[in-house]
Image (tube, rainbow, N blue to C red; front, side, top):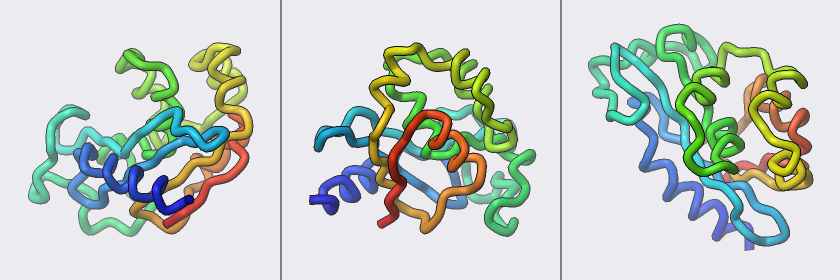
Length: 151
């Protein structure tokens, strides 16, 4: 059963504009995918919606988890949580860069009570990585995500 979620997460990864690593994720509740996402960044002056060429990636040779200030990434996990609401403002994504410490007040500001209720107890399937960073784990905890599963 979980393979279909990993396949869908992998399919989502093609939307990532990151030159270093393309990640995809799906959020599942009661066997239904309720949100999809991928990692995005703003490297070398690029927007979150345009593909970043490898030669413009300022983090390409950085150790994993380092140099986030160079590309201002939104991790796939967070992008997926935010995608629970369609048409979310671009400024919401900018509030959730990998360098931002998640807090209860930020969660309350960004997610309605209904959205938080729908996220409670969900499982996130992540393709393209074998761990979640401390910040993503904290976001998941604050939002009541039950589990993050890796392909």
